[in-house]
Image 1 (spheres, helix red, strand yellow):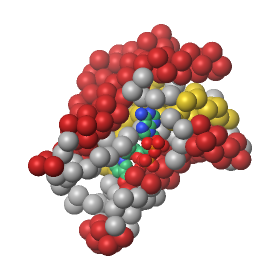
Image 2 (cartoon, rainbow, N blue to C red; image 1 turned 90 degrees about the horizontal axis):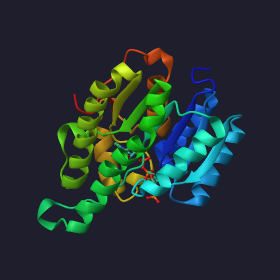
Image 3 (cartoon, rainbow, N blue to C red; image 1 turned 60 degrees about the horizontal axis):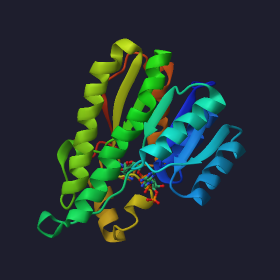
Image 4 (cartoon, rainbow, N blue to C red; image 1 turned 90 degrees about the vertical axis):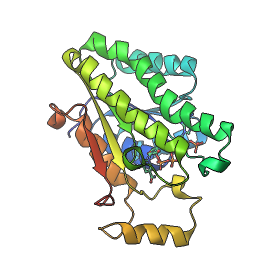
Length: 246
Ligand code: NAP
């Protein structure tokens, strides 16, 4: 077990990549705090983690709300005494071409995908500094490397995540804390739900591996980066996309 007894908080873990990551981490022996904004989805993920033989607890927390994140940190440290890993996974899309994008669409995405990542990391960092250890993992995207049609807001947020990761790797390396970003390509989760089948098929055609990624394939990447096997990896930006950008 690569994460035995490590304590991990995973945001947006009610479904999709976050849920797969929670299940993977518990299978690898971690104690996982499943964080999301919907109690029914949290309960579902906790149940799946327990059915996989793992240890998990659920906590409602909105990455926009610092008070709920302080409560999350207190509940985690109160129950398990430490925080070894934060997975900043919660994220949304609100797509429109620049000429049609509303201020609300721009602000909503920045608030969750960028400020939310800052908020969560700010909430855990002092605990990690006190421990002199910790791992901060972050969902960026290939859109955070190359941009994408109709995603001014999302691209801005995902580029920014990479900027923060590199900054945190510099600031926190001597304190025993690593920070890395993962850039998924197109992964089969509810976030792709609004994309028509025809477009999904066209996307698959563009991937050298000929298919979308599975949430478990991103979860496996997070598990490796959270483990001691990745002990000298920090400030890294790892693309997991089936070769999409080649
Ligand atoms: P998903 O299935 O939509 O899951 C995201 C989760 O985050 C949902 O449960 C969502 O709840 C939750 N969430 C939304 N707002 C939140 C908030 N304010 N506080 C806490 N949780 C919140 O998405 P996914 O595909 O698994 O994506 C996970 C991450 O990977 C995101 O950061 C995404 O940008 C990134 N990513 C995904 C892909 C892909 O192809 N799937 C590619 C590149 C990067 P609600 O549904 O209620 O909003």
